[in-house]
Structure formats: C-alpha cells, structure tokens
Length: 370
Ligand code: UD1
Ligand code: UDP
Image (cartoon, rainbow, N blue to C red; front, side):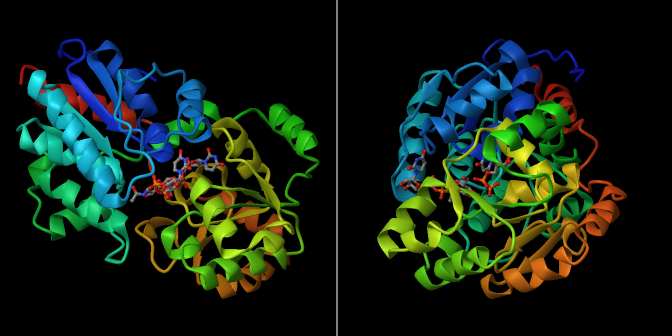
C-alpha cells in the first residue's frame, strides 16, 4: 500500500490499543505512520494468542508501553488506562492520539487525549447499534463525542454522525481498515488447503464459530442454547474459544456441550482467515467477523440482539437469536454452493482496501504542524 509522506515528528502520533480487533484494524495505519508512531498497549488483552501473536502476524513493532489493565472490571480498565496515560501525557504529550473501535481501551485513550487537548482520531467512527445494554455502544458514542477526526467506514456511519449533529468538517468517509487487514494476510488457496489437512477438515464442509459477547456468554441459558444449537448442526463445528467464553463455560458447567464441538485455542490471524474462507459458513457474535465475511464471501449467522453493522444484513449476515441458529443454517445448507456463488457476486460495503492510507493522509493534512 502506498502511504503519503506526512510532516509529523518521530513518535508524535500515539496509537492507543489493547485488544485483538484493535490490533487487526490499526496494523496498516501503524505501518503507514512509520517512525512517527508510538504504540501504547493498555494490556486489556494480554495472552499471547490475543495480542502479541497479532503484532507478529502483521510485522508491526512491539509497543513502546504496556499499561497492564487486563482482567480488571470495565471501570477498572478505563480508570487504570486513563491514569497511566495521564502520567505519560503529562511528561510528554503526543501531537495526535489515534484510537479504534469501541473497547474500554478506546474510551480511555479518547478521554486522555481530551484531557490534554490533544487532537483525537477515531478510526471506525459512527457505528451505532442503538442498544444501550452493550458497553461497546457507550464506548463508541462517548469516543465520537470527543473526537476531532471521525473516520467513518461507510455512508451509514457518516449518516449516524451527521444525524447526531457532529460537524461535517470533522468527519471523513474512509472505508474500513479491515479490508486491507484481510487482503494483506489471507493465505493462498494452497496454504489454506494444507491447513485444512492439518485440522482434518474438508473445504466447505465445516462451520467456524466464535462467541465472546457478554450478552451471550455471561448468560448461562443463552450460552447453553448457543452451544446446543451448534452441537445440533450436521457439519463439524470448529470453535476457537475466547478466554472469557472458556472461563464462563467452566463456571456454568457447560463442558459436556463443548465436548461435542471442535474446541481449540484462539487462532492466529492467518489461520483464522484461512479457516474462515474455507468454511461452509460462520456462526459468530464478533464485530470484525461480520465485516471480514464480505471480503472472502462466506455467510455468517450473527448471534446477537442487535448489530451496529447493518451494511451486511440480508446479504452476508443474518441476525438471529440463539434458538434460531439451526433453522437459519438449514436454509443455507440446502444449497450452500449456490449461497457462496451468490455472495461471490457482491462487493464488500466496507471499502476498497485504502482506508488506512486515507486515514494516514488525513492525519497529515489536518494535524501536521499542530
Ligand atoms: C473486549 C471488548 C470487546 C471486544 C473484545 C475482543 C470491551 C468492553 N470489550 O471484550 O468489545 O469485542 O475485547 O475480543 O472493551 N482474558 C484473558 N486473557 C486475555 C484477555 C482477557 O484471560 O488476554 C479474560 C479475562 O478474564 C477478562 C475476560 O477475558 O476478565 C474479558 O476480557 P476483557 O478484555 O475485559 O473483555 P473481552 O470480553 O475480551
Ligand atoms: N480472530 C482471530 N482468531 C480467532 C478469532 C477471531 O484472528 O480465533 C480475529 C477475527 O478475524 C477478527 C478479530 O479477531 O479480525 C475479531 O476479534 P473479536 O471477535 O474478538 O472482537 P470484535 O471484532 O467482536 O470486537
């Protein structure tokens, strides 16, 4: 990808991140900023499989700081990250702060930038589920409220922001950086088929699932229904289990149901993309997966009460309650190849793979010399 030359000093752009999806979606921006960047990792995700594995996969440099907020409560994570950023910014304030998405890390980075009057860039601005039961909805609304450059991935996101009265001069329609993340690391078909052999899977003949949202895994009945429905599918189900979901399954005594699925550790990005692209379909409550399917053209059953990604509903994604997973799967399984062929004709609504370059250019244009 070609990145524009921008006139900002080394280390002057602080990228604050802390979780798996933030690393995925900020990786190309970090590369594009080169030595102008300092990466500050809050430590919200700390296991190798959810954090360092992604730095390695994208070949981005190690963070210059870890703030160690992992495993705390939501307020605890925000407070600790904000406190640590306060100390850092008090001794040397960056010229720009970049955050992504809707996590506790995102909000902490946004509040720290706001407190020091440092221009704040919000990558993936303007998403709205209108579901106030989700911490992520509050995190993204609050972050957008204090951002100085809102990088909206789609027209829907721009419309949400304009509808809320955000000045249009602060908004740029950039596309979503997930497109270049997938494009950069999706392995070739030959490598994908070697991986399938390793896992004893056949292309198109298995389901890949990820479940980690509190609305699903913190509610024992809902979690149990999801696992029962997955276990009832006619295809093998591969479930790379998020640590939150693993802990909850243990405490709710759902081990028997898990044993009916192919439960594995969280996958590295390259492996996850390979299995996703070769799966028959996915069942997930992930935000990023809802976008990624539109690149490798597989359908996903989204097990959620609401979504902030309406762009793929009715095409790549179906939003369902847990007890409707098997029924939705059945409607696809009667002609899965036909479903794949139909999706292959559709463009991704998330852009053309240049979002990161647009965002780096916009940072330079707006904040160089600030
Ligand atoms: C967080 C984000 C969510 C995002 C998800 C990506 C918020 C509110 N939630 O949810 O939006 O979709 O990351 O995966 O910011 N844990 C480990 N090892 C780790 C990280 C977490 O064992 O490396 C365990 C800890 O017990 C922790 C629990 O998982 O308490 C939940 O982690 P946390 O970062 O609080 O939330 P996620 O569910 O990961
Ligand atoms: N992912 C991965 N390995 C896995 C599960 C997910 O690499 O075992 C990737 C996935 O492709 C996507 C990101 O992790 O890019 C999404 O993370 P998650 O679902 O945890 O967060 P969300 O997107 O819901 O905030």
